[in-house]
Image 1 (cartoon, rainbow, N blue to C red):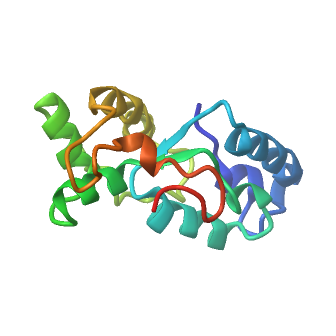
Image 2 (cartoon, rainbow, N blue to C red; image 1 turned 180 degrees about the vertical axis):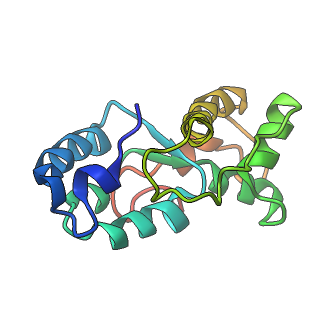
Length: 158
């Protein structure tokens, strides 16, 4: 499922009259304890941008439980070449096509290539998670990716 934030919330977070409904749905999803949210560089990058772009949406203030796979990769290998593309290549022997990453995401309608990119970028995360061992050697001291799950502001994830 892809949410079009620009259309639904608008530039000011109020256009189209859908911001309140969108915020309600996203808040329910993002705070549901039984759903592990998985991202890549989500905490340092995407979440900050979303919160800054849509300050009136409470949904982006707290997302839990959350596992940021970039933290896993960084703890094991450092920041060098810490990308979703390289992680997918390591797990599956094939990287992701990131050609659409820098395309114009504000132009509507989104192209088929953009929709495909967005869907693949999200769909690959649980597949990568399934490939990761639940326990790992140092530097995670054998705790594995489970130790990086954030259960709320300031909890988990080091």
